[in-house]
Length: 135
Length: 69
Image (cartoon, rainbow over all chains, first blue to last red; front, side, top):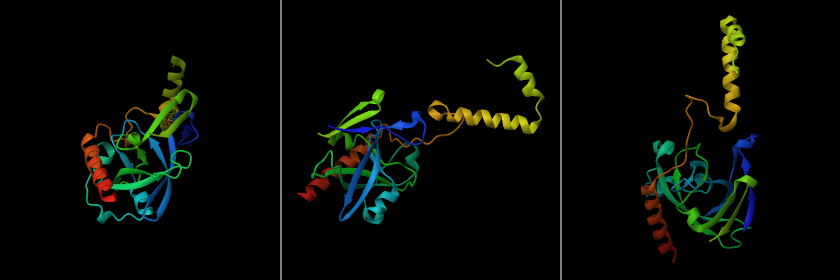
């Protein structure tokens, strides 16, 4: 299992969260993102700007996804990308499906469908570390 | 504990200083644990209990895998 530290969003120790760096690939485009491991999220969420950085074309994504909560006010569409991390996936990229939202402010969320179906994760919050491995 | 003396002193402040004192306390509360302030609105991005969306993505993923194979 690869071990990662909890990362603070700012300088406050109470903002420590399990944030995982990942490479996302679509066609020949690659971007590095830091995704929040969100066990309460039913789905993975990709903010609009990241989809654009992957050269995804909004109009070409034809499967609408209805999100709830703050993201419910934004249109979202299904998008499949390949995800990798040198310590976790070796050379084997994993197919992740995202709700690509028009929201610019949303973080990258890694949720139950399908990040947690593809990766096994152990949280050790008291030690401020978490471990991830391919299923 | 908030003493009567402190309350008396706060009441004797002019309007501007009262507002400054309020602002100071609100800022301090905001920086404390969980960063939550009563009455404030916070964004919650987590799509919790969003099984309909999960089903849509599941079906989309299966179709994507079928196309790829």
